[in-house]
Length: 432
Image (cartoon, rainbow, N blue to C red):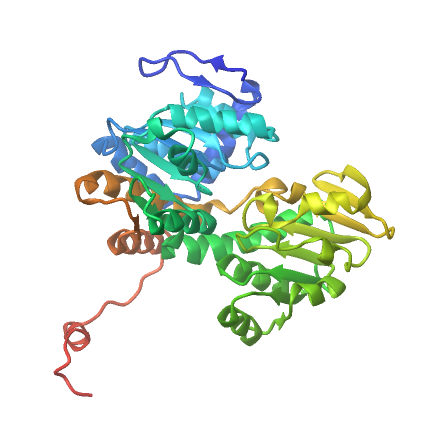
């Protein structure tokens, strides 16, 4: 791995691996532009700068390296953390942001847009060899490594924070099997994360990625949404708002009912494959769209993923059934020509379309998610002696603080309970 050196900062020489240092000025502009729309995180950063609650802790974070993440990294560093940041997705890295974090903010960053698998795992390796006491994950790759190939670097872990549905599922499975080695906070399950980040952030940015990559008109199209969790709900809502006819596929009967009650058609993927114009998986699972589905699709369909890694689409199976694959027929679109002559267009290599072909979630949404990350990190450190190797929810007081502060920054006021109302809700003795 090519590793470069930057000038000494804070008494240390920091190593890194980014694409092009000369992009730093553009990256700094982008970071500060996002910061304007992240007032909650900015307030936390100002307090962290004074109190240094993370001082003495080595942190490794495997996250999407974007302008919004950069402001989280700035906050963690302000709090005193010795941070290493690595990319959680080969296509989501904003190279100018990575360069600015290194050059302008003196951070150790290992992230290059389009990096191959070998480089990706070398970067993960750098994060683990940092011997962190706190980790942040987007998909549990760091934690997986610290439980398998690099156990020796996870001996001092105080806690880990996970911000994806799939990552939380993996960690809960580890705990259920009695193999979880340290405490984990399920940041993904926090209302301040999934209700806003997943629903509004994914909803808007997924549609943005599809439009940027294809330049298609959404109105009048049949858009198939695989999965009706918070991400699926958000995307289905936005697609409907643009005039699409939305079809939902599900394996959960409650969510399927909810999708139908919300006004969407619900059917198995085998049936949806025949009528869809655009397909998007948002499940967190693997091989949601498979060869038996691809072969039923209309000529020229668009297929993408906005839920998890590219394994949501069986791309190896698609390649085997294709007689020709044209890479980048337009930026971010690969065209697979099947034996029948029909074509299937895969957007962003099947990776997260909202980050691979667009800018990811808006900063105002990530303001809450990353504020939750920052304050939960502080809470984990303060509560370290009480924590066990379990999966924990984000404390309610953190969520209440963040949502209240977010409302304040938006100029919104809400009601408060009167003394009588508080009493009524806290006792069984008062009648109706």
